[in-house]
Length: 201
Length: 268
Image (cartoon, rainbow over all chains, first blue to last red):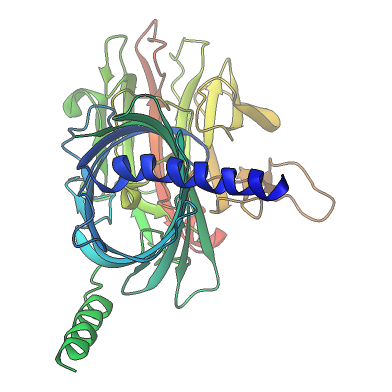
């Protein structure tokens, strides 16, 4: 009996996983999300993200445009554009997936204020991602590692999404970043919080 | 083999393509030494937050605290600019993350000054976290806040006011006891501030050489974080009434505005 229940769980889990795979890996998808609760205050940020289905069963490409200071995606002040190519290393049938990727993070700063030292730049980005899915929900835990001329950063971006319909999901994402200078002992923690909607095309 | 080389090249390209700085301010930035004693009879060293330069800010020869010239700062009931009733001069990039700075200036309340409501005669206002994408006036604007440190002239007294809540403009708190101010007399103010976004930050303030921040058992440094983010603050002085418009035209005179690294450097 125990073996039967165990087998049933495995089969059902596999089916859930197949259902989730359809959305996650077999369709183009677009998501839009808004935030955010920064370290000590609320500041509006909006994101729009596009990701491809799996290419050759192993690769996926995604791109995210982040707009600062607005909930309406368009701003005259600051954008981040992050493009990532992801390689799926293992693809077990129990819902757990692991992937790694490379990307470029473009910081576009358009502010014209002499009090600002922010400048436009491009940084390389390394990604590790661990995710688990079942029929109704998907949990991703990506870690982004960026390199700068005078330091580096790690950002963990856990994201939980809940499937509303076969093509639509709502999600929430918490971003926690650790920024470290090479030359100084001090470091900085940053955090942001987002909610959004994902649509599989 | 060819594929491996290709991958190594791509990896190297990524690793060395980093061309921007970490979006977090470096500590111990360059300290500026600023002299705004008005002796060249211009405002060339300052930035303006003023409706009409020819009316709100004029150079006068009487009264002066030292030398030949001083600033006459006038705020009229309709002087509204940048979301507030104000006539202020500003100095930028002088309150950087983890720097230890002295600020000094002298002021005189005109004998005909009549309003009894609050008036910020100087403030160290926070900035958006530019390096992390922020700017003034986001949509919607969710975080109007009082400056982390301000000196407020209200009802014949000078108060040290601080704010620790970047979301609020009505949660300021008083530091020390208010100082009684007589109209028509010069007062010298020196502030010693260590800027940080944690509780190692402090403020030490003198009026006419007398410490006004409370004794903490060791010294008169008032420990309280004074940066909302690491992009620093900036200094401005003059008159600021927020949304509370002045009833009458009011004048305050300023002289010997200085920024430096020691008490003696900035004290009039």
